[in-house]
Image 1 (cartoon, rainbow, N blue to C red):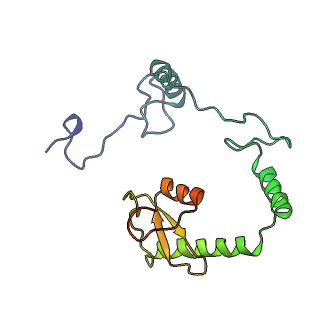
Image 2 (image 1 turned 135 degrees about the horizontal axis):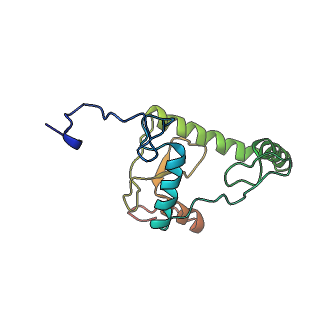
Length: 165
């Protein structure tokens, strides 16, 4: 059985060590073009397909002079310092800590296969979130899709005996 370009199944594609465009030796044998020709090709492709290059929301340098993380106002060091300060100013109360522990235990039980995700109780979607009615019963979980989980928290309606919220 032959596949791409008359190759036999399982046979690896052999690429030249030279760039297909400028015929100079390229850095990566797996790729077709060298870095320079690849950049030129991609610029043309983006123009032809009207695709804009992804631009960072916050370009430039951080206030300390280091380069910023993608879509962040700060570099890693300044972001860490900011979060440490924020956590000191906004400490978690005991209930928030307890809820975080319960959520962590739930995630671990899911990961270990001890708690099985089911489709959304309302619409049947496969992508679901765990909802705890009572954090004192950490393994009694309702499975809801994102939309219905948000609706539940907005309206505060408890589950009725038959269908629906």
